[in-house]
Image (cartoon, rainbow, N blue to C red; front, side):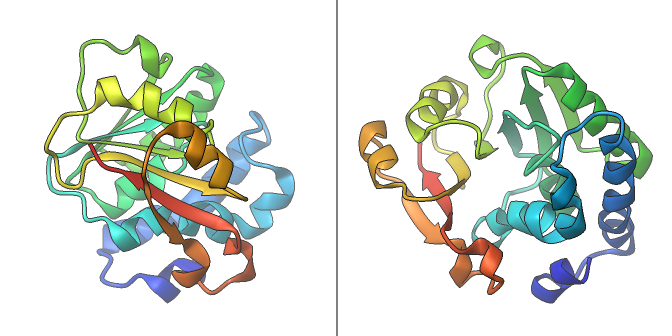
Length: 204
């Protein structure tokens, strides 16, 4: 938890309680439904919570904005972002229902009221639009953009697709026909884990 407060301050008592409670809940549920690598649990706050919050270093979501986490898996980046931005509405979507079961249990235990989940594929959502789509290491940028674009409202600020990715992105960005803005996360957080990890934003 200290790794989070190293970079972020001004949390409310409730936010601190929620962040503090995450590891024990994920450890408990991870024994039943594997959503996080066992070796990653030792560095849970750095590898999952702080990594998710890289988005919050560059983007200030506004109250009542609608943010979709595409391919949310066990809830990253959506759950940490929902705690960080309690006045923003987060909708976590994944095609694997058992992962969302873990998210729902964590959210209920910590009383995170601004987060909903949906067991579906992003391309099957027809009735909703979002200000922003966020994603972490789900698919190539080309696919993420194809899935996200029909779900986005025009003119939101910030808007578009925001995703967390790793490795050499040159080919992936070229093949996507997108021109994302790219941040090196190792310049945001000094820990060696963040080397060759990136934050991307494709505006809409």
